[in-house]
Image 1 (spheres, rainbow, N blue to C red):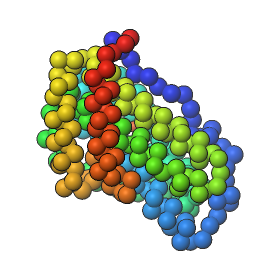
Image 2: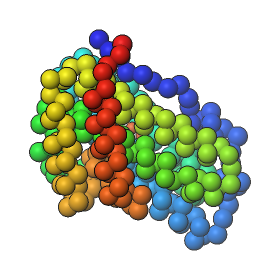
Image 3: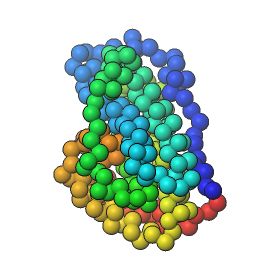
Length: 236
Ligand SMILES: [Fe+2]
Ligand SMILES: [Fe+2]
């Protein structure tokens, strides 16, 4: 069985030397930072709800996919913890309040279930979604640079690398288990992208394509890159 790759780092250690006093700013700046970081936090946190939904719908069928989602869930919790710490540092948040806000949100998987037909379509969508996330974070570099501490640059590098690994781990499940179906991946992603134009994000982790960085080009390029990766032979 192929096993997912996992990177080893800790946001707690990364941010250990930083304090909120180092990032004090005007209320309008703090507000703008919050508005930017809060959606990043809750979309990461929504990974746990997606996983619950997939388990409830019996969509995780193979040992490879189960191993993928276990490794992935630990990483997405790590990203959640990191964003909570960042909001504490730069946007006047507190972990207790943020956790309460996160728990108060609602989740509706209705709009995406038609795309999650089986494990294969699920893995294709995850591979694509993680590629989009990876590229969207890469576009956030100016925001983190403006915070004026190199630790945030380091954070962004770690998160981007994790998201790239998620996409490749999902691709590897597809290449190992669904070689005979890869010609269906293009249609799945075409339909997903078309549907995403009319969808509001409803707490599903996937299809969080809102905000300025999620351009048509980003989605199209991520689709192409994912398709290219799926088509490469699996080397184990
Ligand atoms: Fe993440
Ligand atoms: Fe991810």
